[in-house]
Image 1 (cartoon, rainbow, N blue to C red):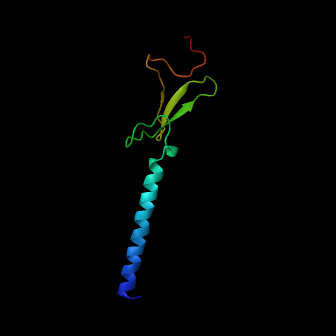
Image 2 (image 1 turned 90 degrees about the vertical axis):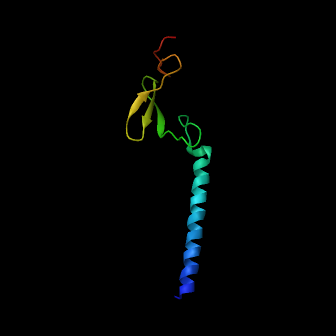
Length: 85
C-alpha cells in the first residue's frame, strides 16, 4: 500500500463517517424518535410516560429510574380512574 492509497482510504473512510453522522442526525430530528414528554429541539427530556395498569394513573419515568406523577394544570394526577371530578 502506497502513501497515496493510504490517504485515499482515509478520505474515503472520513467521508462515510460524516455521511453516517448526517444520517443519524436526520433520524434523531424526525418525530419518530420523540414522545409526548419531549419539548422542542434541542431539549430532549429523556423521560417516558408510564401508566399504572390497575389505577390508570400516569407517571413520568427517567432513564435512571426516577418516577414522578403526571399532573394537570390544576395539580390533579392525570388518568386516575378513581379520581372524582
